[in-house]
Image 1 (cartoon, rainbow, N blue to C red):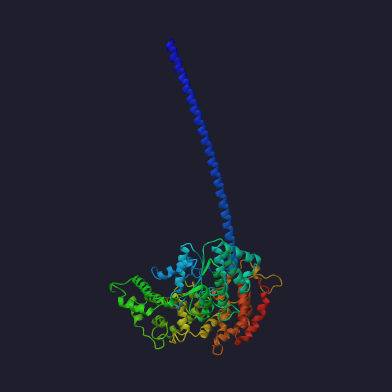
Image 2: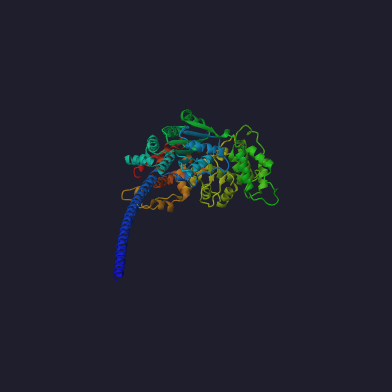
Length: 619
């Protein structure tokens, strides 16, 4: 019995020991659980803190983004940049065909990323050798590789794309867009003087270009900024600068900026003496010149022609290989170093009036004239002549020839890109007739899909050809500048005489006012859009420019009659509309009047005094 009791006691003790062990384990587990819970709470606190920090960063980022957008909107309002003229803009030139110019583009890309090489690269070449396409492909490639790039493509025939002030303002805006230090500098310039964008050229180039670029050079950023500026030769001189004055203003500023470091400059132009005189000192000291017309292009042009022509739909009557090797060789030989020749050939061949075979045969059979053999543009000129001749025919349609000459004059000499509707109105031509001519010459300009859209030349070399009597020897096509401006002056005066009326925008005047104060007019842009037609707006802004180029010793009676009617009955209405169009329009008017020809001195006297009196009431 005692043994049994002892066994039971031992078992009880063992169970108690086990219970204590289990309790100890439970306590340990509870301790571990508490530790895990504390760790979980600590992690939650850390996560909450990280989330708060993330939200705070997001708020800061959003605040910075709002601030950036606000500053960007402010700069857009002040500078009015021509963003369509940048490499990302809708009016940017087409780039190089894939697989062409690869060696050159690779070389330029290496230069852009090299911190040791020259800081200025000047790509010069004859018109039509592909400078703009290379600049576009180069800028696009840099942006795709994450390299900061600021670009602008000057164009002689696109409104405000050849104005030096617009170029400065757009470059400044693009600098502010891509680099914080430049944006801070430019915003500070406006804080110091809110009208810096309206001051003289020296102040603007210093405050809007040189100082921001100095800020970039002094910043902690290790990345280079590449400035791509295309077609320097197409830049207009602003009022008060003569000869190569505009280039002498902006190029030294850009080159000095490039010498500071972190800024590289890529410029393109034709090899003109005026540009070379400005560029050469900087090229000798800081940069490098690449002469595009001296670089072999045979393989690239062959690739372009073979792919482009091969993509044209060919009827079954064509040979299996079209064009033949012989035809392709002939085209490549004629193109020489001119990509514009190859591009125009392709556009000409795909026109609908003839089969591609017929078009190609016409091009290859075109005869060389006696005057073009020594010109580097001989083959390009011959192609342009062939395009025009095939459209007009062998001189059998004098009415068509005159219409074509008038339309060519409007496109080449217009101050803004012309639309089909605009030319129909200014030139008093049937809308369908203008439409047919524009469509028939699709090899030389982009045919708009709508009558109100602008017509844009594919290349400036066509304008050079028509306006140079030594290159365009066919009198059917040669444009005499003074006659072309007479066409446009007559049209502008006719539109002004027909459409101008007192208080055209129906603006209520304040007591004692004779002219409207633009800044106090509600919804002025909508009023102008409603009451002022595009031809009337164009005529108001540019009639003086066209009149100044007319030879009044040999002008028609029609333009003189329209001018008398305008001076006697429409002058004040025109001045009123000019006020409504804004201070830029009015200042341009005064500048144009100040340089008016002697033949129209009476008009100058009549216009200038009221213009100056009215300027105090505008903005």
